[in-house]
Length: 403
Ligand code: PLP
Image 1: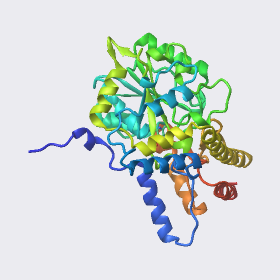
Image 2: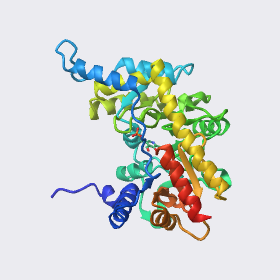
Image 3: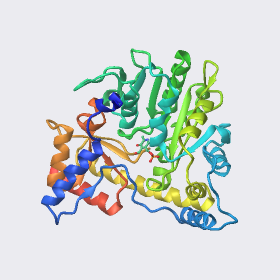
Image 4: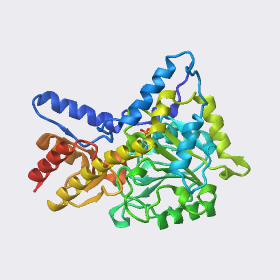
């Protein structure tokens, strides 16, 4: 008889955002006239910029013409996009086009990268954490068993707390695979280059690999914060970097991202660049041509200007949240190099209790910190991806209710 993958059965039944959506739906049904302001899920609201849409339309027309039609493309991305990424995002860092792997987004890549690593590797994650890193390691069978209040037995959790400015310390147990995400989801903090360099040194000394998720790189404004881990000396020997057009250019629904694996990165004499190329070309047939042309247009002069304007719009929303809540006496973090604000929930409440209060009293949706890990308890994530008007309204409602 057929057997299921028991690792999948170990996973909690639903995903954080499904639980939230169910609560919000129930509230809306009970209060049909109420305007709900959503500062919960990390999805963008600004439309794609014109050069991106034009490029996608032009590419769609090419696909409808016998002379310019294209069938299967190269599995790891068209050269035009891989080169644009290498030349623009990695300018001066000596990353070659064939070290860039184009995909449908950073969720797929951060979720699938484990395929090229052995199952007996010890995995370390920050806590709180973007849940994909943990859940995909559970699916792979690398996580051990789950205990409520403790987490997965084989995962090394690196607490990111107020005391350490939400930056992980080197764990007691030596991990093989270290997931780092900066600017961070959910805490919104960035890691100074000096600290990131220390992690690179640590990984090189111990023969670990850092899986560096830089999905929010475009939001960095603070001097001394690296945009890429490859700015750190020695990183090409120990790091893989993931990026996405989702938050940078509004591609959450369009789907495009990429992973950079330097050729220097080897485990023994096995090239991880070669393994990933093999994995990808076996399991996927690339990203659609119109989407890759759209992503290429992000790097045009006009594309860059307009995309930066959208990011500035979200950055201004983050400032509105930060300043509004600070003025009202809340303790808040993040929100400077990131679209996420990490607020401390009022004393005596859990983060889910605060979620319920906020939903029922203010009709504002955020994300409870405990949904991102045990050490997220006591915090709450608000995102800056809504409109300016809704962001202002939401902050006003929170301040009025809780002060
Ligand atoms: N990595 C982090 C840290 C994220 O927060 C997200 C989305 O919220 C992703 C990756 C997913 O990005 P993509 O839309 O490219 O799959």
